[in-house]
Image (cartoon, rainbow, N blue to C red; front, side, top):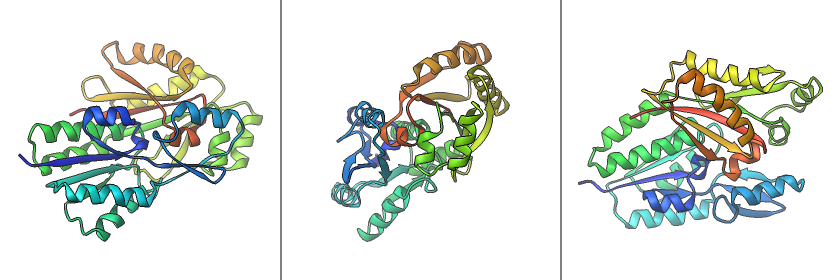
Length: 285
């Protein structure tokens, strides 16, 4: 049986403890604050990062430390895998994908396959877990790559931030747009474009309930259902909204629709902000 290594980064929401449990390598993105670099999930966790935001700090994020990436990939090269599959955050949202490609080329690692997920968050975790399951079952490299291609093609993400402050600080939305939303007391609903290029405005509403309806309507329009898709909800101290959303969503999709709730890692909370939650779907395999 072929010897495969499955790798992903911390924007997948995979945490170090689960990385060991599932046998999937995890590479942390970086959190930068006051000139100090922290490895996401290793040097700083979600709770510690939330404290930074509450204290008025303005942290930023960066792709994985290139020295750490090179050190890890040298270790993987020595292990002589038949194939190494690295599933990364969308290449349009981070330099992580390019960083892995460059390091693999510099180390002459021809067995490395860097997969641009064109997304972020829980669908990446779903891809990594399924790839590992396929590998453990003795499935071929082509089977795994075909599965990943299908999942990448059929995933969708919507984000409901409590406000647009963090997105404004991170340059993901203009200060004018953020200011107008606050002034008019309008709640924004955002989505990640299917090609993974950027986060866009989906719509605006004056009530949480209307936002929940918009999310449900969009996923139903996309034929997301219990038989064909997994549903993931990522949150950063947004459980009150999550519970209210779920009470509506279960009526719409049926009680057999499974929802996995996952805490946003620091690198994603940095952009979404506290009190936010995202709803994501991923094709089942």
